[in-house]
Image 1 (cartoon, rainbow, N blue to C red):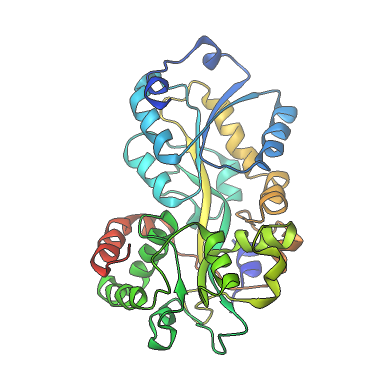
Image 2 (tube, one colour):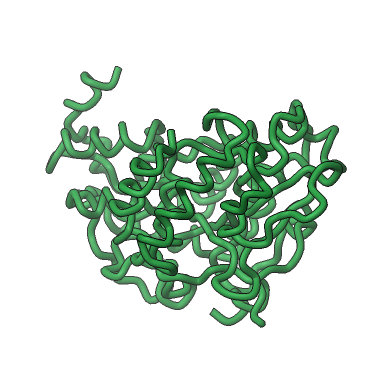
Amino acid sequence: MPTFCSTIARAGLAGAMLLAASPLALAAGELNLYSSRHYDTDDRLYSEFEDATGITINRIEGNADELIARMEAEGANSPADIFLTVDTVRLTRAKDLGLLQPVESDVLEAAIPAYLQDDNNQWFGFSQRSRILFYDKNDVENPPLTYQDLAKPEYAGKVCIRSSTNVYTQNIVAALIAHLGQDAVQDWATAVVGNFARDPQGGDTDQLRGIVSGECDIAMSNTYYFARAIRKPVDGLSDSLDMIGWVFPNQNDIGAHMNISGGGVAANAPNKENAIKFLEYLASEQAQQYFSAGNDEYPAVPGVGLAPSVAQLGIFRPDVIDLADIADNIGAAQTVLNEAGWK
């Protein structure tokens, strides 16, 4: 059975929206980065690119939906060169709105596995997080081993999970629809809602804290939130890691679901060559190692080593579904979530 390691080894907004491209945006040696990644550790990622290339990065950071709206409003005058975000949903939305353009790069084609690329090369995945199940080792003798198990009656009143509006929730449901069909996932989602310990609330770290507080016995979270608590103190979590166990689901069939962080070149990029250089840099071994060491993520490029905090979670089989298949089922996923009463 392939594991993660063996698999990768193989394979003021209203005013701002009216901003037109400035002369500086068109200057050689610059890159205008629109990013919804909110991690301080990315500062080093950017500074090392600047040092290596002499290209200055001008960063516009914000909520992904706001950045997409801004790029739409700016139109052909947009100074954006790169759109960088943390989920397939927003990358697909940006593509569908005509905000990205195809990229021809032998470097990216060679480095990034095909299933982590858009079919038209308008965006690429550069890091991954596995969305897995965590549980209270003191209270859960037989933890769920698959995503489907979350629907079992024995877990009634035990499950904590993100809201239906969260892109991580939409992604996992879309992936399950691609694998199992919409009718089966509708039944599953309805049963999972019946097993909620509380109405969905907060972020992934809050789901893990719910286990510590005793409000939840089982929680779904991306791996990097837990790995971060291994690497450095996280309030309300790091001191209680010993009580939390984890399961990489579906190891005998589809594998554990993977979320991505990815990016593409903006449709009207004034500095297109610099933008492609930046994407190629993100696929370099140096940058890939830093995604893992600096932000506890899994590299996208095969063969790159893992940070100790990430490696401690163990070897697993990932779901290598084509991300385009997930994107195609996002609408169906939202329908499923709404009909299930998933708040």
